[in-house]
Length: 91
Image (cartoon, rainbow, N blue to C red):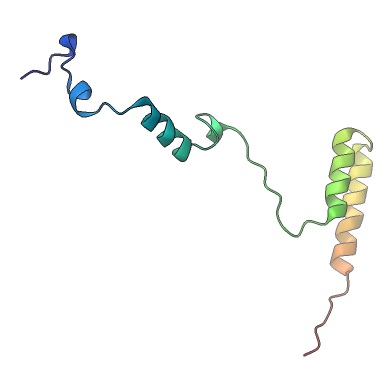
């Protein structure tokens, strides 16, 4: 029937032979972070995290503060956030 794979007659060659550009475009659209993008962790900053918390994390990661200082500062920040007075809106 003309589908002998040894002579270039496989069904894939006749019916499914996209251009290289089409394959690369499809991969780029479906996998914007590349073929191993799903294996890499994605970090997203959640809105509402205080700048002070990000600063504390940055200091810790750079080695400017140790683990205990990091934990104490984060705990203090949490306590301040919890006890922060709620602002009221006048209507």
